[in-house]
Structures are given as structure tokens and as C-alpha cells.
Length: 246
Image (cartoon, one colour):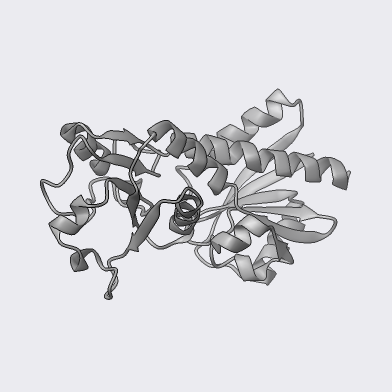
């Protein structure tokens, strides 16, 4: 039986169980997908999680994508380059980290079809790092903004600065399940139809940022494509490991 799960917090709203149950049905593989909410992770916790639940693999979400990377036996080249892991697979007794978010981000950006040469990334966590990596691979310069004090604080940029970057990508939880009405600290009246907005949040929709994009006539996309595509890539890894471990 193929046993999978998700670690992170908050995760009760996650659509991952339904996606992977759908994969199991499509591939006629008996299995289960459970949620394991936690805000901290150690190697002991990981070992216990995999052993006690007989897991073949698990997905990783906020706030653990960066925390988990140094705890693993090895990581693939993409995850290492990004500095974050969103998929862990048990392979021949070793815990191996991957970043399938990148595949999802690629698909979402393809759909958004922005011609922007520079971007602003809201957030500095694991997802933001994956977005920054993919943008750099596409030759698009980007800045990761944070609320924390420093040169890349939101308040460090003027409205004119914001206007020069025509691609905005939200990698924060603002607008998500715990912060549905929360707005990013952005200047008013900047968005126009020249902009493209990618909000990684997939539930609930539309987020405040996506509403603002629609009102301004900007092109936009939410996190559903990214979610689905990263899940497809993770499923391939899980299934390969499952058959190899039989």
C-alpha cells in the first residue's frame, strides 16, 4: 500500500489529499494520503513520521520548505539550487529532497505569458526562492520583498519603483485561509493593464491581490495550475519509489 502525506502548517485546507487520491485511482494503486500538521521539523521527527506511518513520501509546505533541506540524506540539483524542498521521497532507505514547485511555477508563468523584464516577489520563503530561481532561468531579474526591516522592505520602494516592475508574484500567505482579507502593503493606484499578477494562493479565490488585478485590467493567474503541476511531478517520484521499494 502506498502511503503519502503532507507536512507544514496550516494544512487543513490543502487540496493535496484529493489530488493524490485521484492519482492513486487513475493508476489503480491502493494507498492513502494523510495530513501531518507541524510548524517545526527535526531529523528525529522526520524519521518517526516515515517509520511509524510507513510513508513512501511526503509533500512539504510552509513553513518547512527551507527547514527540512539540511535534514535530508541528499537533495536533487534543483532543490539545492533553490534552497528549498517541497517533496521528500524514501529511496532505498534514504530521505531524498526534491523541488517540484519549479515545474508548477513554469506552467503558471507560461499561462500568464508576461513579457516583463523584471519582477517583484512578495515573500522570502521557500516558494519565493523557487520563483526567484525560475525567473532567473528565464532571464528575468527579480527582487524578493519582505515586511522585515532592511533594504528589501516594502516601504523601501516608492510607488515609482513598483511601477517599473510589471510582473508581481505573491508568495506570502496573505489572502489565504488564515488571512483572507489581508492585503499586501502595496502602494495604491499603481496597477494598470500593463501588469501581470501571479498569486500562488489557490484557496479561497479571488484573493485581494487578484481582485485588484482584475479591477485594473491586469492579466493574472492563481495558484491552482502550480498546485496541480507540482503534484503531478511529485506523484511520478512517489510512484517510482513505491515500485522500487516493493
